[in-house]
Amino acid sequence: MSGADKLKNKIEDVGGRAKEAVGKATGDPDTRNEGRADQAKASLKDAGEKVKDAFKK
Image (cartoon, rainbow, N blue to C red):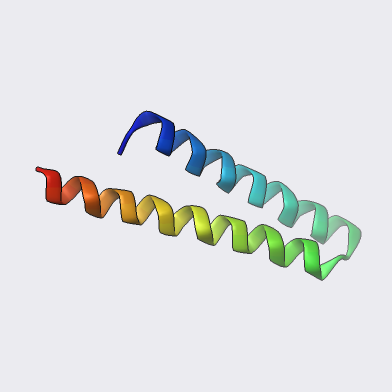
């Protein structure tokens, strides 16, 4: 996994956490769910990159 990919995934995860927190604070379930979806997407991308790395070795 390249450093740039790791950084992008981490930024997406942190952004998702922020969206989720804002959604909870404002009582907006749509924003909260968007944040959770962003986190899940970042986790899936990270897992995919780890699988790629495992096959490269």
